[in-house]
Amino acid sequence: MDYTAVNLILQAGYVVKGVMVMLLIFSVTSWGIIIYKWRYFSKARSESLDFLKYFRAGREPGGLNKLAKACEISPLANIYTSVYEDSTLVDIGDVRRALNRYSALESARLEKYLNFLATTGSSTPFVGLFGTVWGIMNAFRGIGASGSASLAVVAPGIAEALITTAAGLAAAIPAVIFYNYYLSTAKRLIIEMDDFSEDLMAFFANIMNEPRRK
Image (cartoon, rainbow, N blue to C red; front, side, top):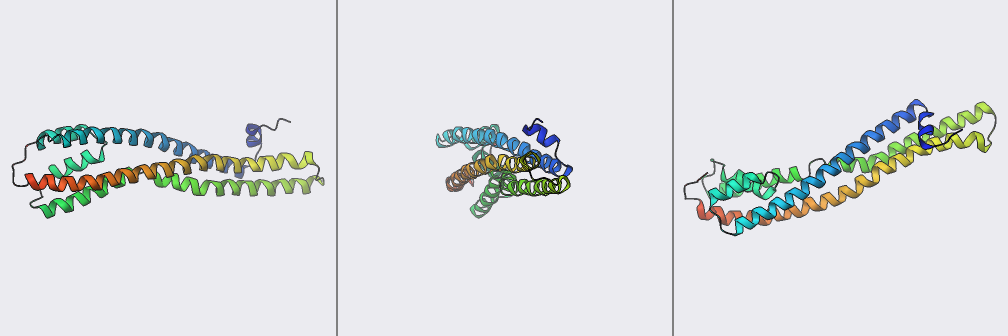
């Protein structure tokens, strides 16, 4: 008999197959998030650097707003546009509150989907362990039915059961690694937003009484 991983999965019971399908869904979704967030953070950093270069060059407010709109991913550019185009702001206190509000929204965008990676990293090993326990129970029932505990009888059932543990770890390990990496990246960008908010406070304080040009 061929005891390859694929054959062991195909020969497994419905519960073990269900566990494998669940782990596959977690794994595929996690890798989709990992690839998406890699591109997202790369573009966010690039656009933020470009916008900061123009901001520190002393461009006029309306021109900066046009540049900010072109930087759709940059949290710094999005904060600038949100505050600049908010017609409800009448004094510097309103600007401060708006900066806090829009910064919180951008922080949530940076951390979006990371909770799924954390859930995958913490739960899939236990899902895989459940499949292993269930598979071993079936293996022992097979031993009882056959009346023999020889290696030829035990090995297929045990191997089938352990496949789910391996699948659970395969789903969890990259999710944990990239969750920690992306979380630290998001925190660095949030710190940059906090620093930039102080610069924006001074910037908007200077133009608060000037007509806005869009």
